[in-house]
Image (tube, rainbow, N blue to C red; front, side, top):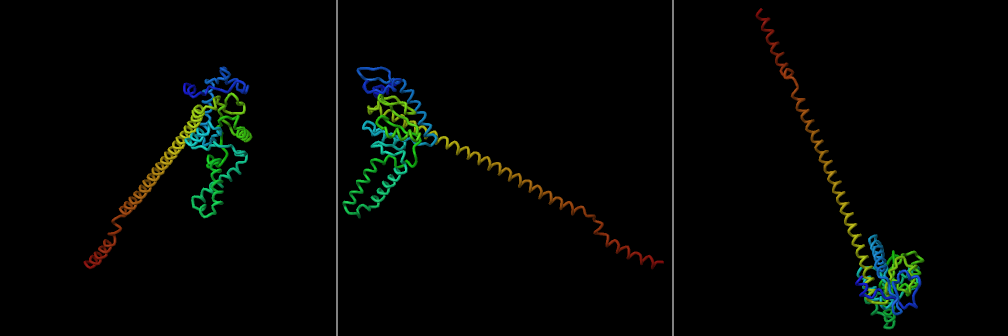
Length: 299
């Protein structure tokens, strides 16, 4: 709360410029200026934080949007910090509703960058090279922040939806949830996660944009932890299967060894059971035959 006060988050617009739909978020009026209820700012910021974190934890994308001068630097810096796409210069009509065409322009920008990297601009006439350099600079300024946005974002974070009317309209048409800093001159009813706040003070914009970026970073960390835990579970399951398979193999080999040993013993005992008389019977018969003639001779 103290940081919000120090950053001037509570200062709204002049009372004559207000949107009556912001009444629930206004605390009082002082010297012709509406004062925003910071307790509600905290509550709504927490809701937006939890939602943005969940989007990131699910592997989703948050598009940061803020083209007014007070928001450009914060939007670019915080989006870079949490590795999310952003629009900080000008919202191009159809950036969401005509996404395919926008992607074609991004590819054109990347082609020009590749040509310049290969030194092909130097082989062209100066006038043509200058024209391509100008085209590339313009594309980089307008589309550089969304070069890695290869599909529609899962949610959009907007600073001053009253200024970003086209962006709000396109997101609503495509049913893309919107998080936004809404000042006292905005309509909070068209925002899914409104954060009542001063959207003209640079410090206020930087503070609150930073919190949404923090939510994205936290969500990604949760996703990474979940992935690591899942990988560990898979590894443990594979190890358990390997141990079970090894144990089964050892039991099979032991059983096979037991069978072989039993067979060998059976063969040994089978040979030992043959009667010795069967071997000595032939000489005995021969001796008997020799004695008989002697007896007859004595007679």
